[in-house]
Length: 389
Image 1 (cartoon, rainbow, N blue to C red):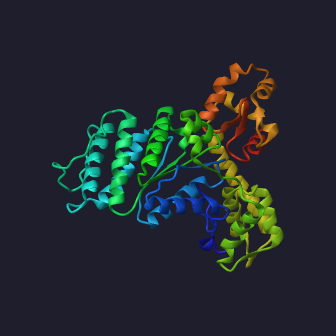
Image 2: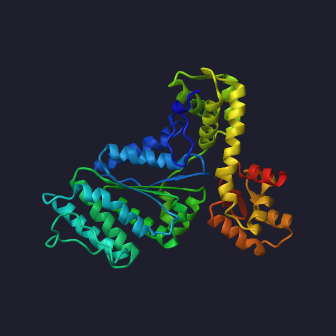
Image 3: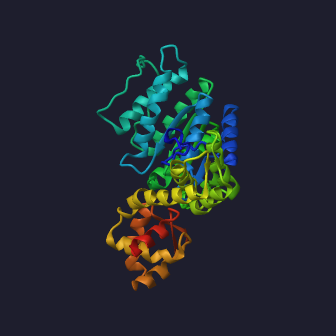
């Protein structure tokens, strides 16, 4: 099959040709955009789930939906060496610079002045220029050094400026579980203020399965956020994700070929894209056969082992690898920390540092008290393959 026309797109956050099974979340977000434009601000959206289920894809779709309504959008990823303050500040620069003009309204000019002060709060040597004289414009005050004060000020002023332009502000944060405790607490407080006072700003957070717990520990009222658990696709939706993209290129799948790929992928969107791409590449006719599907899965699994899984495995220390191996018998299901300790003939407390580091690295999480599980589906099988080899 022509690889140039291959419709399957494995990769972090890449939108598949057929984005299926996420209608409820997308509909909720689109309604929230319209409600905010009518003066009613909804609580933040929280997308949580294992890696490979499409949270980043959905978050990016949220961005596209907001941009289609001409909203100002900031999409950032936590977990880097940059603080939330800087990430949001730099993210705001582009939409603000796009609307800066001498004839701008009072609130827009005020937001520009506030943005300059916010920039100074994390970059004393840096400066922005919006090409507008703001010397006589009120505003500023987002450089106190107190995160809550500064973040509240910038988001309030920018969102009200967006309203003056007839739109709103959307702030989308991926890997939100990696925000610091102070950042999560501040973010929760600011979103609460936004909802109470109906600022035209919507927040969406995406992260691992432990994100709801982390948010609840930051502020109790985050329990009122709109939580969307993003899971693997149903078999029917997985079927659509496989068959629809090829149909657009006048290529069909034999039914047994589709069913094989559905089963082997575990119905996880990322794996569907990986296996689908390889099956397409080995096929020679206008229909992808069971033999093509089997070879595509085998080739795709090898690529995952040497990339997707290997990259995570190689980040671990020897003691962390031993901990992960002890989790394997349960597969993707959770296992008690006590059972892991028993298998390693260690005390739970002595394994605490390894467990904490694995959680910090995003390889495992605690779905319940005293239980740990892999954040990456299929990780246990990969580790067992390393043991066998």
